[in-house]
Image (cartoon, rainbow, N blue to C red; front, side):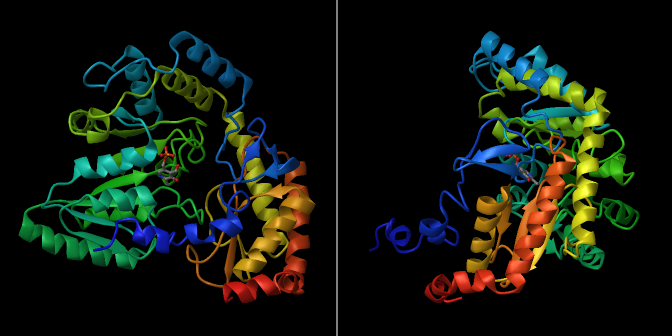
Length: 419
Ligand SMILES: Cc1ncc(COP(=O)(O)O)c(C=O)c1O
């Protein structure tokens, strides 16, 4: 019989197997200094394009003040226990009410973490007879939530209306047999490529099919829509989203998350959401911090305006220089280049070491072989000077990529990796 750990000794997994080449630099890099447009990486100043601090709140003096004062007042323990048992406070309720109003829903409920909260909400919304229909490119937290489902699930091709309709048809037929309902899950903004979920078109299908729509709007909240209520507001269908989710990990620059829906649905989830019933309540420092951040989202539209000034400058600058930024409809800015994994590594090193530009890199198996995806996240704390320097750096690395400089530099590594 095998030892449980044998498989771990033999294979570190699809990403772990690159650890000796990548760790500390391409994965698990240590960005140092206050969170802002410019931070330090391995002792060098870099323009930081890899942090979802969309509105620049992470290090805003007013936010830091409230965080510090709340920390001093409550420490990191209060309140102790799960919400249902002993971890409930007026402040938690106030934050829920304000979040609900902000995203134009009747009620909201706090979650400790977005990931765990999404998993748990999916689990609470469906019973064995129900059917889940979801995008094949869904975030890992949606996939894991679906994994808990004891009934049927269908994936549809990414943002493809024909495939959505076909799968709703299949789901409807099945639901007629099982006696269950249908939950359709989409993201408001797909975080890797920046496309918005086709919420308007999906909502229009409610005329033909009976389903409920659950939207993970992690990247849309605070960045899209007239008031910042997200992708649903941007597309004019916020009222048709049956369950809305957003995390505090992006525009709110904190930790925690929430769901929002009709009062009756939230009342149900409050008593059935296992991740909240059996886990400690969100700590007060985070609750007070979130109230402050939400107030800034409401009262400082200039933050979103500055974010979009930077997004537009970066995206139009890249496009006018002939870069392929795919079909983004949000702040998320992907740049697609062609090259091998060793070339991608040399290129990113060049960007960081010689141009002072730090962005995330995504390669096969997350995207097709031969493609390199550099992902830039503009924020309100960036400047137009940051954008200009970055555009120049990107032109310089593309030139080297196309003339084979990185290929020559990495020939030995490529042979070793079988590229
Ligand atoms: C689309 C999406 N959903 C959920 C999450 C998870 O949120 P959290 O970081 O609060 O766990 C993330 C990442 O933060 C995300 O990008």
